[in-house]
Amino acid sequence: MKPTFTYGRATLYRADCLDWLHERRPNTIHACLTDPPYGLVEYSRHELRKLRNGGEGGVWRLPPQLEDGYIRMPLPRFTTLSARQVEDIEKFFSKWGMGLLRVLVPGAHVMVATNPLLSFVISEALYRAGLERRGEVVRLVQTMRGGDRPKDPRRKFADLSVIPRSMWEPWLLFRKPLDGRISDNLRKWNAGALRRPSKDRPFGDVIRSSPAPPSERAIAPHPSLKPQAFLRQAVHALLPFGKGVLLDTFAGSGSTLAAAQAVGVRSIGVESVGAYCRLAVRAVPQLASLQLNGQVIN
Image 1: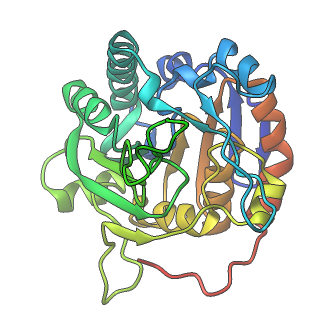
Image 2: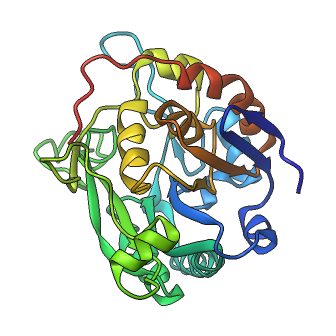
C-alpha cells in the first residue's frame, strides 16, 4: 500500500487496519499506541450519518453546552450496545490482536484505550490472541460520561445516578512474548521494557490528564481526540531506546503520529475514514509543533 501522507518521521495510510496488518512484513513494528472506536459501531456509516443529522436516535450522545460556552464533542453511548454487538467487538479485537502479534517484534508493547464498560471484552480478546497482559494504565480524567439521573419528568429520582460519573480512562497494556531473556530481547529487538521518564523514576500506571485543550481541539476536531501531553508521555515510554517504529492502527486525526514526531520517533498510522485522513494531513504538523508548558510526567 502506498502512504497517503508523510510528515517528518510520521507516515499515514488510508486503509482498513486488518488489511494493512495482513500486508505488513512480520517483526517490523516495535510498539503500538492506539485509541480504537470503543464500540466499533459508532464509526459505521449508519451511525456517522445520524451524528451529522443531529445525533437523534443513534449511538452518539450530544452533551449540553458548558458554562464557558464550549459545546463538548459528541460521545458514544456504549450502554446501547446489544449482546450481539459486544460479541462482534470481541471477534474483531481477536482478529486485530492476531494480526498485530504477527507484525510486532518480540517484546513490543501494546497500549490500547478502552472504557470501563468494554475493557474486559477487549482484554480477553487480546489475551486469547497471544499477547501477554502487562497491566493497565489509568488516565485520570473527568469526562462527560455517566452520572445521569434516571429519566422522569417529575424528578422522582433526583438523588440517583444510572451509572457512575466517569473520572478515569483505562488503557490496557500488553506485550508480545519475549525472545529469550529480557536483556537479550532488548539488545536484539530494541523492545521488551518501558522507558522511564527520568532515571530515578519508573513509568507509572497512573497518569494525571485532562481533556484535549481548546487549542488542540481547534486544530483537530475529532470526537475522541486525546491531549498531546498524555500521548507524548505514552510514546516516550513505549520505545525503550527511542528506536524503532510506533504504530497507531486507528489513527483518526493523527494525534498519536504528532506526539511521536514531537518526541522524535518514527511512526505509522492507519485510518479507514477519508475525512479523518484529510484532517490528519492538516493536523499532524500543527499538533507536533505545539510547545507544552509545565508538562507533568506521571
